[in-house]
Image 1 (cartoon, protein in one colour):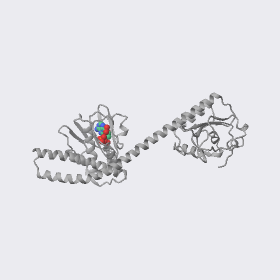
Image 2 (cartoon, rainbow, N blue to C red):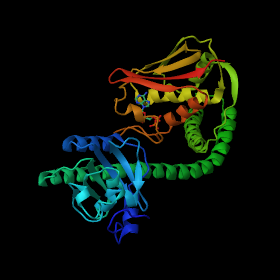
Image 3 (cartoon, protein in one colour):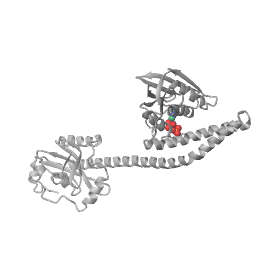
Image 4 (cartoon, rainbow, N blue to C red):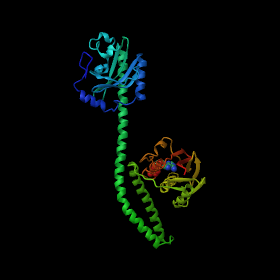
Length: 397
Ligand code: ADP
């Protein structure tokens, strides 16, 4: 590394210091408003033409945020005053750089810099990883109070970097957790599938042997079939999550009338004699889609209405045509979903807390993927106390 300064600019602990800096994953990343606001604040407070937030790497200095240097985003370490500023704690100041022998012949001073003040960014474990600095093309004075202000700004920048790191770590931990859940559930669901298939076959056989549903045995059989259906749906959901994660959810498209499909599949949903489904609108609309998967979407939305809006005895399904697309909406008159939860309900494993019902938080995630793969959209409108309306669109045949 070429050093244009008259003193050494590499501290003894440089490898560890660079590693500490890299931990924040900010080097060579795009500008971020939060840091840009701080350089703007620094330039405005000290009335300087230049303000920077810099990170000192092993060979280059990266500017995470800049004011007054145009598109420049980095400098050679040996040509940056920031490299000098991280040599010791406390603010480094050159009120008139031409009069300071250690920097008078350096590249930045030759380029016109006369004033420089830089406060090191100190990581919690004591490494000086970069600076917040101000500079100007004419000499100027810098008071003790100015030092305090710049030092305080450097602490605020550091706190912001810590917060950013904590948020990134949290997101990664959640992602890893979701991946671990996926892996476990994938194995578990594969293991469950085989006995479930043979159980389903046995129940179907028993059903044929005992067609009378009014006998106690017939009733128990019907109940067992319903439970088994639920279990089958759960296992299919789990298998689908794995398929989605690996981009392997094949569509088997055909042409069908969506109104007919809704009528057929709603006839199979167990409504406990309490719920009524009202289908309205353009029942004749035809789509070209995977019928089984669209059935899964509708069944899921209706089951959710029953589960989360248990006192809404009417469930309205309406069919309309919008921009050459079929639009299906499933509306309940239940408690609605709070606005702060709405953006999350389609996320994998998301369940709103304080919930008395059971579930895996996978239903909406899976059906949103199914709709997405069809080139459609899935959304929700909800109002507290008035109910929710889940809708999806599909390209028309
Ligand atoms: P699960 O039912 O397993 O929790 P879903 O992905 O189907 O998973 O739903 C995610 C969350 O969305 C639910 O936990 C619930 O809080 C909310 N939700 C879904 N449908 C409705 C609805 N019709 N009314 C109110 N909340 C709903």
